[in-house]
Amino acid sequence: MTPHKLLLGALACVVLSCGLAAGEINVIPRPAQIVRDDAKADAPLGAAHVIVCADAALGRVYADTLLEWTGLRLAVHPTTATAAGRPVISVDSASRSANAHVAHPEGYALEVAADGAVRIEASARNGAFYALQTLAQLVARDGARVTLPVVRIYDSPRFKWRGVLFDDGRHFFGPVAAKRLIDAMALYKFNTLHWHLTEDQGWRIEIKKYPKLTQIGAWRANSPTPGDRNKPDGVPHGGYYTQDEVREIVAYAHQRGITVVPEIEIPGHAAAAIASYPELGNSDIEGYAPKVVETWGVKPYIFAPKDGTFRFLQDVLDEVCELFPNSKYIHIGGDEAPKKQWKASAFAQKVIRENNLKDEFELQSWFLARIEKYLNARGRRIVGWDEIQEGGLSPTATMMVWRDWKWARLAIEKGNDVVMTPNSHCYLDYLASADDKLADPYYEQPALNRSGNRPQRLVTLEKAYHFEPIPEGTPPEREKQVLGCQANLWGEYLFDWNRAEYNLYPRMFALAEVAWSPKEARDWSCFQKRLPSAIRYLDKVNANYRRPDGSPARAR
Picture 1 (cartoon, rainbow, N blue to C red):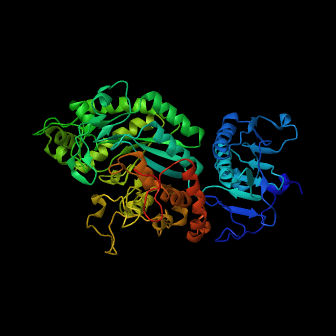
Picture 2 (cartoon, rainbow, N blue to C red):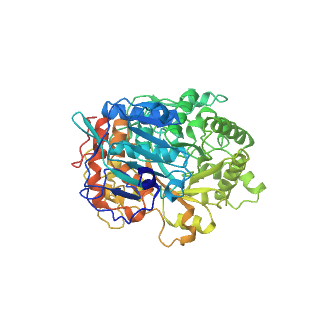
Picture 3 (tube, helix red, strand yellow):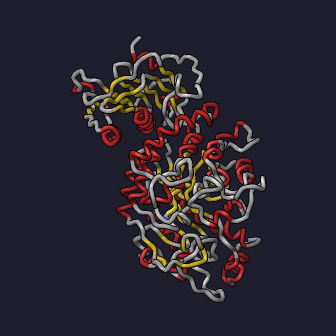
């Protein structure tokens, strides 16, 4: 049987082992189905190989990765006609195979033959891209010798939303950090970058119609001192992304199978915007004096429900939609919006009465419904934190669940889609260990979890790995409403990207497997045995990470 027919043929029953000794490969997230011939020596990969891919940009992304990792510079050809008998890495991104994995828009089949020939089949570009990311992880180098295991893989993701939140609002990390994160996300098959761009402590995206947002709103006079959240450090902090930088990052992510979902916080977390344009806030309240916030925590400044505020937000969202053309979602926040200013505002109370609203919670739902209607008219859908159900949940909104799982069950029962990102398992700014050597006192406060013996803000690597996104008791016919899950990297206590990477890795790899791999293929012991290959990747790209003893891989 030819390799091509073998690839498309029926798959024999495979039992994945928990070690690498038999039938396993060093790939995270673990593929759905693997057939490895351990009796055959690994296949050679050398400079004679040619990447044959009709999508030249896709081929070059892999060629660049291979060059960085091995020093091999492979040519990219559109067809085999010019390969002249050389060993080929063949990429078919328009396969009509009936195989369920290949037919999935993010799935693929990959075969490495004993002579080094590689064949990839996918029905869409992203599936082919993920196959190449798997192939990149399969590469092994021993001195000058570069090899691939002889293997067949059939693979597709469990969930359609596999996300990482990048919080630029509290600390501005910049384009280099964004691209470093995107590279790691792509290799480990995340497909959604949730970009948190506006906050009380800083507005990070250029809006042409409102230049004060970045002239004023992107800068603060102080930040809390590391280790003491109540003491100002005396150091001005700020920065923002120009629209050209945003377009470049969005395009960079798109080439790597990642959709960037922007978050523009509404109606709370709005102090930086209101400091820039004070007429946007509840200016009729006593002591009204907005400024860009210099401390952490939930702050009172909230957009006023004025026509002028809605015109501002619509103008902002017009530019945001133009900058993020590939995302059908716009994240509108909706969380941690204190109602004190609305309670004190005569104008806000007038809006409540005129619209027959019961209270300030219904005012928030009325406010968000108006924004949602505007975005829907532009072909976009809203996603918001689980507070968007307070005062009534829109039937077309997607809820991002970060607090109690009861909100997920409520949304699912109502027919809404959810993205699961509970702080109990997915907040990677939390400690990875109770004795973390880089812990901030904020994480050591005596709020305890239900067991009563650990700090509440604790997500170990093992705990992240054992996260199950489908809420217990969800009817099978409603499981599809759980779009997926997301790792959140909030930036209050991540004072630079070096520290952010320490918090991110290796826990991000655990959540990559949660989001991609079949539930039955996940195995903690096996994951631990594959993890060293991911650590070698971090060393190769000079990334920081948390070592088993709690120390950072790179000095701060």
